[in-house]
Each structure stands twice: as structure tokens, then as C-alpha cells.
Image (cartoon, rainbow, N blue to C red):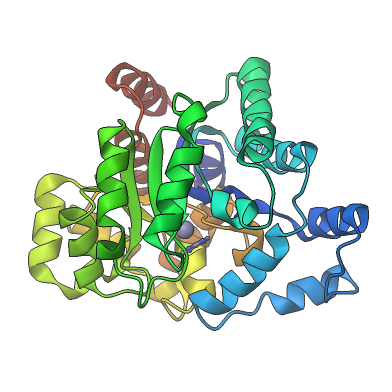
Amino acid sequence: MDIISYVSDMPKAELHLHIEGTLEPEMMMALAEKHGVVLPYATLEDVHAAYNFSDLQSFLDLYYFGASVLREESDFFDLMWAYLVKCRQQNIVHTEIMFDPQTHTDRGIAFEVMMQGYLGALKQAEAEWGQSSKLIMCFLRHLSQASAFETLRMAEPFRDEIDAVGLDSGELGNPPEKFTEVFTAAAQQGYQCVAHAGEEGPPAYIWGALNSLNVTRIDHGVRCLEDDELVEQLVRDQTPLTVCPLSNVRLCVVDEMKDHPILAMLDKGLLVTVNSDDPPYFGGYLNDNFLAMVGGLGLNQAQAKQLAANSFKASFLDEDKKVQFLDALEAF
Ligand code: ADE
Ligand code: ZN
């Protein structure tokens, strides 16, 4: 099998995907029309032209603006459904999906409206083709810890449907320590904990996520390479890093795909995985990330298989489910 077919068809998990970041320009324009939201784009080309980012914040400004077209339960359903169909097409047999409640509740959308839409699509995909998934509720780090606590409270009726809490949005100037108490409270309620760290922020933010937020997985984490002691600990503890290659190129974390350190990270023994982050904004879904690594980094079959195996190992699945998926990958 050639490498393009191999990476496209191998079974894999995705662990770092923002559902609000899967909003395709076509859906954004259709929902804007439906709700009478005026967008600063006349055509799809205008939207694509705007996706020319200089850093994380320049992306976040458009991302939050785009999410403002999501209003009704069926909008949240349609958004989630479209991503789950991609999972089926790309053989993403398990996905751990991040969502940002504050982006909606701060606009007056009820937490329940958002959740019913998301959960409806997840249940339908599970019933129709056995899609496996988990949900990660992220706190926006540019907002206060009090707002994060309020979000944790709103999630109480959905405790059994949400598996983990995370931390996203503008990293610089919003260190993990700002959220120590709310992560402690979430852990006490039984949530798994993850956080974006070391995307634009320094290695100190990765240390902070590990030591103050007690996370068991780091989102991005590519800047760990600037700190040998940190790399040593991450390798020793096999702490997963959910790396997003196309995102890092588009947000200028690295210059070009050929400069991306993901394969060097794999060689060091770090438990790295490949993820798409916000696919339409960054040029592609999970398979597009693997294909970009084939083109830019010469990714080979053994490396691709290792990255897919890591995606199952790094997931929040039960051990027996992990073994089932790993066996299926081995047999592929
Ligand atoms: N929200 C959506 N995508 C993000 C990213 N790459 N970093 C931080 N927050 C985000
Ligand atoms: Zn992210």
C-alpha cells in the first residue's frame, strides 16, 4: 500500500479538535443568512482570504466572530454532525472533542441548547456507525477564573456526558496558574484534565499546567523542546502531547512544514499525536495533517503507525477499548 493510502485509511484517534473550529465557511454564511448576522465577507473567497493569520490572536478574533452565527440547537447539531461525518470518512474511529461553552453562554445562548445539539449528533453517529467519542469542556483563559467556575457549575447536569476539562484561547499573559482552583474543583468532580500549553507560551507554562493544574495531557506542547529537563520528564512519564502540525504552520509557530519538530519529538521518545485543531481555518482535517507530513517531512509508514498507536494510548478510553483499537491498527 502506498503511504498516501496508508495514512488515509489507517484507523486513528483525534484528541485535539475544537468543534467551534470546524465551522466551514459555507455553513458560516448559511447560518449568518438564517439568523440575519452581517458578516464582513461577501463571498467564500473573501472568507478564505481572511484566513491569513500572523499569530494565535489574529486567528482567535475570527474564530470567535465566526462562532457567533451558532444560535439554535439545530445549528450546534449540524456543526457536530458535519465533523462526525468527516471522522467516518477519514477513519477517525475515536475522537475527543473540545468545546468552548463561554463563547456561547456569554452571548446569551443557554448551555443546554448548545449541549443538546452536540449530544444529539454524537448519539446519532454512535447509533449509525458506532462512532466512539468523548467531550472536553474548555475554559477560555482570557476570561476570569470566576467565569470558569460558573461554566463548571452550568455543566453539572451534564457531568456524565463530559469527560474532561481543558484550557484554551490566548495563551500569552494567561498562565495556567490563573486557573489552579477551578482545575482542582474539576478534578474533585472526577473530570480528566488537559490544557493548551507551550503553543505560543514558554516551557514555564507547560511546567505550570503539569504542576498547578495536574493535567495528564498537554495540548500542543511543542515549545517543551526549549527545556531539556522538561523533555526528560515528559518522556519518563509518557505524558501525551497533542501536536497540531498544520495549525502550527498557519499560526506561525513554525515557518514551514519542513521545519516542524514533530518527528524529532517522536525520535526523542515523547508520546506525540497528530491532530487538526481547527481544520477549515488551518487548511485541513486530520488526514490532511498526515498528508502534509508525508509531503513536508517525508513521514513513513512506521512513523505513521506509531503516531496512530500513540493516539489510542494517549486517549481517555478504558484499557480494554484501547487494546481493541490497537489490535485493529496492528492488523491493518
Ligand atoms: N482555540 C481554538 N484553537 C485554539 C488554539 N490553537 N490555541 C488556543 N486556543 C484555541
Ligand atoms: Zn487547540
